[in-house]
Length: 116
Image (cartoon, rainbow, N blue to C red; front, side, top):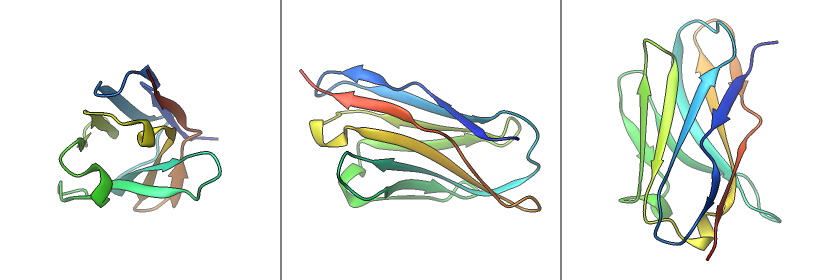
């Protein structure tokens, strides 16, 4: 079964940076919207950022000015550049893709830990 695969998570000190990637494990066709979500322990899943097929982006207020979402449509790949990381950014980050014909796909998630 095709799914999305995230990579790039890890342990980083406050103020540091990480770049997450999200790529399908197989063919999923054309994609409309893509997004990054995160879930911290004991908290509900939160939408972090979205990007449409035309490149329009949206961010949750807490990451504006620090995170940047982007995508490569030719490769069906999405990225999340995270800078000025804070301990409250610690969470499992998952990606989501809404395709034109084959429905919605999710990844398993990658852990991001911000700690000194």
